[in-house]
Length: 313
Length: 176
Image: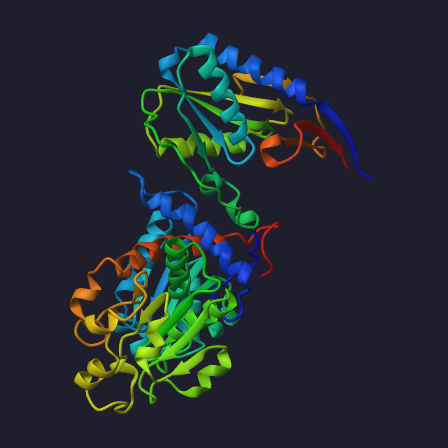
């Protein structure tokens, strides 16, 4: 059991043991979600601010429900209806929130490094719910949880991440987690979206989709991040779909026990054939369920920390 | 230099567990009893009690395990505890739940366990069986079945080793 952190800012700085601690803890929280009474008092009396400066639906809902199931009190703060629109800085917004005696701030922000900045200027625990194209640590943790639950282990598996890697914080967090846990990671997609620089993170880059998926145990599909692309990175969605989309014909040439993952939201008919999204090899909805358990585990772990026997500040 | 004294050896532990099982059988209707071991030390003890009671009653006794980490009252004062699985694959409503733990000390684990049990149903009654009661209660909690009362001082520790964890059964009192 190794967890001595006040914040969860990224996967890059976690050890393999710390990642496994989150996964082990999440297993117990998954069981809580399967009971008639799905709530435990672990964060009773604690206040969590969900500071979502960039729009999010599924991650915000998942965090909110996780917090409620841990009995925390919740403040939801969105960019559209906030003082950030009136010119307040992130630092001032966070310090004002903290003046309400908050214990945790869950932050989603379009700027990479925003959670790290917050962690330096405030006293609450900070949890990164996605920062720019940098990291999305809880997504990677729920992906690892899902893979381990289905495959028994992560070490030695061939994992192919297919799609928009360049603009994807999910890809970066997944690459960190998978390589730390000993998986063989292959990246594939249009060359404009999968630069060779990613090889420095310890993975393989290929532009041959057939080769990338043939020996894969896991295929993790990523959505094209239209909102983050400043210019057109490939000719058309139709061309992307025919060159890199997971079609039935392509799926037929993969290992029979391959698992199909996707962080959502899926674009049916673009990166994934509609029927494949609903087939038995797709674990996309299990990822959503496991996301709750993983986020409960993260909140539970970073909560250990403020007293004399707690973690270093 | 830590000083360690064996206060229960293998046969003494076995006798204590058998006696507790008979006391449980004497106090309760057989169809009413379910056993729930508190993670981790209480789990193998609950399983042993279950086997002995099954012999006495001629029928199996539902036995579960309960982790109380999420219900502790000191979560923000310590490192997050290691959470073990909770498995209670039977209905506890209207049953007599015998909570089982290895050592009864300040009583806070038992309070957390009673709180946690509430999430699974409403037992008719809850009883408490422990192998060792070492005193120093901080809450109004008392065991119904005790293997051995061991007077201790606050700074001593009681370590229960059961063969299920790989070594020979023994209970050791360690002085700092």
